[in-house]
Image (cartoon, rainbow, N blue to C red):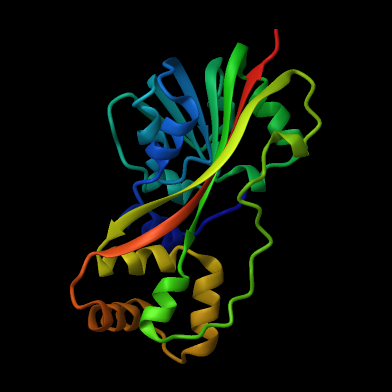
Length: 234
């Protein structure tokens, strides 16, 4: 799984869009689970969303920085140690983490699924084009080799069956400060900004520019959401 440094973890902790629960609601609807494993939990936004559907959640991430910044909540246990995943889970969630997981690792995680357990693969992509247009900025962004729609069909797995897959768009509001942290958590955007703007303090630059052009308005953004739902075979 990808490694995140302390700066990335800090940006993730300061703001993530309120999308995780929306996607899980579309996918899981009114289902309830005893215990879930959140693979690649980051700072815990997806784990927190899972508490609306689960009695207990174990958030796992290989990044110690992410776990150190994880948001605490009753019912959630966080760990970065794979050896501590000694439970069976009736829900396993890959929220924006599946792209970084290889065949060997997916097999390891799914070995912790209970009989007829549920698997969710989901992700979202924030669409920033309206922001750059509003700010009058033209950035040469090199797209990351990243697939937001990746699901279990790209692995060799014989003991799960597909239930359904879907995608939809949703909107959310954020402040200028929150928008800056969103942008700084996107590797491709940071690289594009760094190469086109000769300034070391990207945070202050972006905050001043966004405050000027948006005039303290709540900023509306759109995200494209994806999910795939599976069930384990007996």
